Amino acid sequence: SYVLTQPPSVSVAPGQTARIICGGDKIGSKNVHWYQQKPGQAPVLVVHDDSDRPSGIPERFSGSNSGNTATLTISRVEAGDEADYYCQVWDGSPDHHYVFGTGTKVTVL
Amino acid sequence: EVRLLESAGGLVQPGGSLRLSCAASGFTFSSYAMSWVRQAPGQGLEWVSTMSGSGVNTYYADSVKGRFTISRDNSKNTLYLEMNSLRVEDTALYYCAKDAGGISFLDSWGQGTLVTVSS
Image (tube, rainbow over the protein chains, first blue to last red):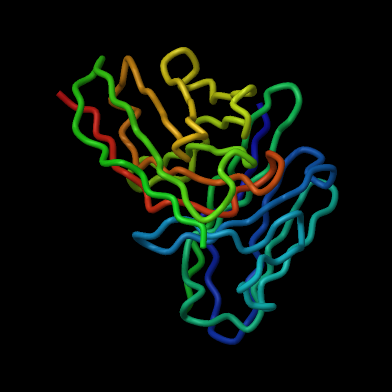
């Protein structure tokens, strides 16, 4: 089955840029989506289809995807961005499964 | 505004059964696939099951296949998850989520309901 690997944690100072990677075999050929989950809350979609933002998500959140790595970039990090972030793909063949990454805890120093 | 409200979970003994429901509003329910995603305490997100808008197509994670059944009643705008032969490792917060258009990503989530499997 398809596996998505993320670093367990990323630390960043306020105002700096956080980059969260998501590794998967030929992930560049898939559409990658990203969710933010704050403690005690349900996940929220922040980027879909590699780089599109849902309405209401700040432009500071952006995404890219190529080769074996997808990246979520958070620019000008704020304290409120501290959360767990998960990447996700739909593995349509042969398993027909949603696949979530292992998750990355972003800590704002 | 999309709203997804899961029914109360509960404490179940290993081997027991439980049915979760998810009441949806704010969108044309029958036009969208719906999914269940769970999160064990302190762990990451784990996809459980997805059903197409028509109910024709269903998909399950290997960890629940043969034990869990997803269903929906489009006349009641409600999604269900029938869980049988529950195991301690099924203990988790279960989220109901709306698929965006086709089966690709989840654009709205409920607040989750806790299922605890323990003797």
